[in-house]
View 1: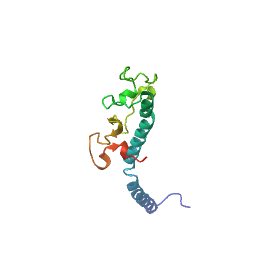
View 2: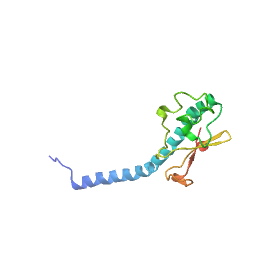
View 3: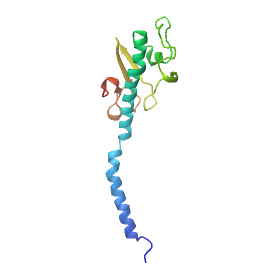
View 4: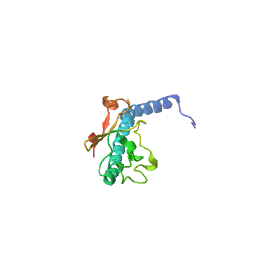
Length: 140
């Protein structure tokens, strides 16, 4: 009675596993970056629909570009924002970072709000996986 695999049987199993890996790996490649881009969109939408909107509801206006997202963590001007929430607008006063560990860029263009992540390359511009991610371009 035989108790072990022959070399041929082992080689066949290794070849089959290699073929399976060759078929699966291309579909998994790039999914990590796509997931990070989707996460950045979700975070920006959450930030906009949560803290930024609450700031506007309490104060009648959005923070200026100069005040940025830091205005959600602490009151930048007590005279300008007398109705500012006592607990601020961000949990623990932490400004969220994108999936690559960079700060989001906040732009207030006369009440039209844009949030921006610089993406994987952490530099303005870029193409494909390194392209900037804008809130206005995220699927709603």
